[in-house]
Length: 225
Image (tube, rainbow, N blue to C red; front, top):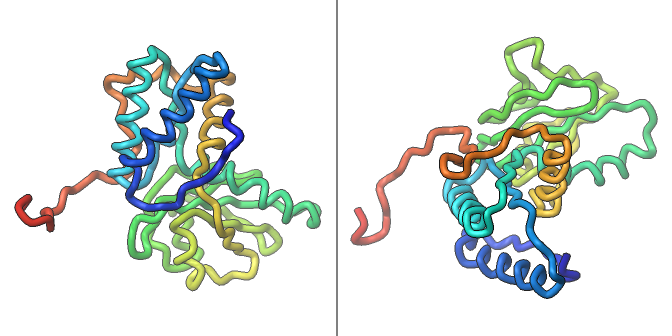
């Protein structure tokens, strides 16, 4: 891989920046005589426009290079990115279980989230308006996480910072700076490919995971409404 690694935090620049990054990667692959085996995609949930741009670009690469597409749930990518920070923190604490709650901003106090962790059955991804800790539990008792007072609950992602004022229990911890980095998308895609957990994707009919139905609002751009 290229030695230069960075994360771009600029918003709403997917269409402008993504082709430049891809060209840099393909140039490096050609120079090193490397071939691409597949395209890994962070499939959502997330921003509708961002998902459409990423998916269209990934599908175009797959068609052009005749290689498969491997979608990876974005919430799982966030959890993978958070693990190293959590492991460093938990290394000093014995016999403590961790519950992971990735959060993707869905405006106001709503987030796209799921509950994952040691000894817990993962909940399905869902949109939640966060009012307190109980907002992040499902009504279905079999799926609801039940961390004890000793268990640590970590929440993170671009939807997590705004929730700090309502998530105040002492065993709930906010992890800043956790983003769905491309390296973790690739790692999970590689694991998925090795484990053969996902069936082959039909690229022509594949769509990203929006979670909520997209509703188009009237344009505020002059001349387009």
